[in-house]
Image (cartoon, rainbow, N blue to C red; front, side):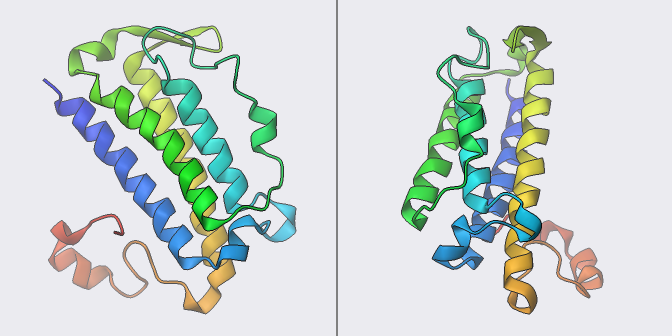
Length: 176
């Protein structure tokens, strides 16, 4: 049975699509531009999310989620990237996650995995990872919204659209 795993997969897909919806609204040069106040760029956050997902979900059930080959500090270095490079990096992390989740069943949720030497139940590790991805996708969306200003197109329920949404809440879908 995979009911719980499928629910977690759906949430990961939702946040992945939100990030992709934000990238789609940015001009190529803006992908590498730091947020106001000297914060991270979308590209830096993509490198971090991809690195985290690849590390955590490579050999998910059998090795520590913080791999010795991961260079976390490097993920946060400013970088100039093309849209193609950004999307390839994004995909590289998500594809490892997708493959790991496809191999799981609900029966695996009580198993123990290790992250940085700390034992966690699979369900705890998945929730922790999902929250981490959502946190950084939220940052990406915020950066994109700030850069687009008034031309920003809402990725969820637009301001003033709550009443219409409430009449048909089954319309909620991640941006395509």
